[in-house]
Length: 169
Image (cartoon, rainbow, N blue to C red):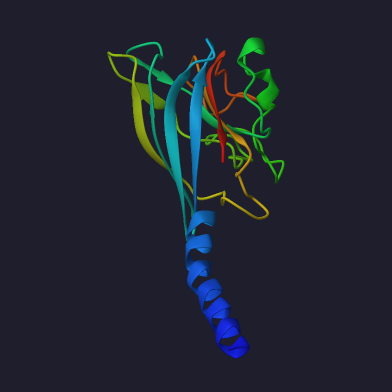
């Protein structure tokens, strides 16, 4: 009887392991606007060579390109303009920007377009990060800025004010 119970426990653990591994390969992040209200959601999926970020965010300035970055902290305090999110996630200390001589760094992402209704919908792949591990972004933040990134200026590409922030969980 004890042997049967032990075998059943081992099989139950073995069956649960793939689900736990799958959970570690996905994450979500709920965006909050400057008013403190939920503004959207991102779903992150880790692949063999990076992370796919799929997102939809509302309440943004319409008809414009905006900067999108990964920031280093795990906080999105809207009362202080999301300054609590810290700077860009940059574990290798590379320069900011896709067009910088010694860039880009892991937190650099391409600009995103906000439609006429103030909604951003995007799928972006970042090959410099993972969800967990050395370049892991779980527990860090996604940030949408007011202006577009010029991909050169240090340290943030002229991205302007922070408009929406989401902690990756």
